[in-house]
Length: 166
Image 1 (cartoon, helix red, strand yellow):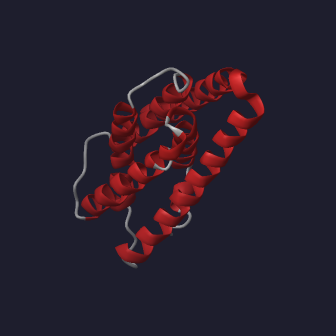
Image 2 (cartoon, one colour):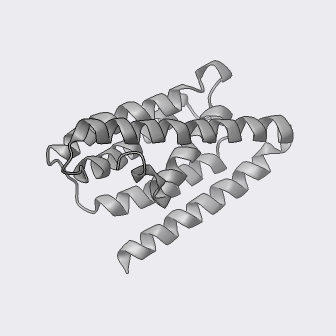
């Protein structure tokens, strides 16, 4: 169950976006920090979620994290202190983790957590590879592609949010 959980649209879009943002917005030798921050916050908050910690409107927050990551892609080529971006990733990831943890299956947390961490890492790698391709093939024009991706991602997040509000 843990392997497939991150393939929900909100989780999938967020994780790929983190990989792309990390390659584009962080220094080349620090691009690993975005996915690592996400994974660390994810497992800590999933553990809390499994123990019953919850926040009001959690799924709404998860869908709005997709909007946030879209906005981060839109501004990725502009200077932003890495600590701010990584802090936003940690906060958003914590929402995803609480959602994962609260949905722990009867079979137990350990195997489930290994599954969703593995899938999350694979999705981050996909995002990193996409970010590298954008940077390699588009160079200075990457801002246009990132703006388009960010806009599409934010629109998807708004749509996901609207489905919860309905």
